[in-house]
Length: 207
Image 1 (cartoon, rainbow, N blue to C red):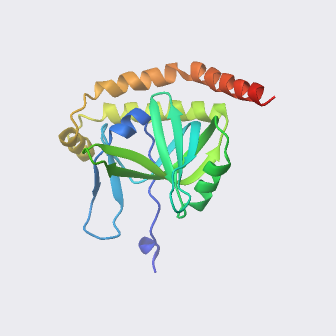
Image 2 (cartoon, one colour; image 1 turned 30 degrees about the vertical axis):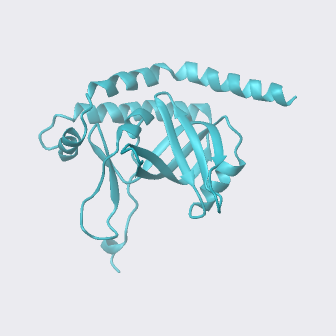
């Protein structure tokens, strides 16, 4: 097997929760059964893997016959939901053992699910979940803001095929993501204080 035949992992893309949850359209770029499935961001990018950092605020075993853990992770713009079961044992173990609130970094695959009423929910199937500090979370917010604004700046480029696709699939004013991105960066100090307060309250309750 040549090096060209060795499959490589897709680069994990960054997006804030507000955009991620708006991204209900997924697609393949070939008819190959093993072809990667991409989520289309409204700002014009495809993502087979995502990387997010936020505050883990809640964990729950929502499985019936087997453990199936759901984690609620909040960034400055909204909420990500991650789900891990028997096929993601390490991530499931992290969700089982972690005590919210905690800053966590998650790498994983985006997944879409259509509900009975026709609504599309978007979640993450985590490959890894790691506890991080406030500085790492703040850096993720700043870097994700930069990536988001770069996508918005390139949205009108004629050769940007994923922006054209997003324009066709979503009826979302692109400017709203500028507002949420700016708000996310401005909220950094406030959200750090909120986690510290929540941690202090939790400690006090356990004394």
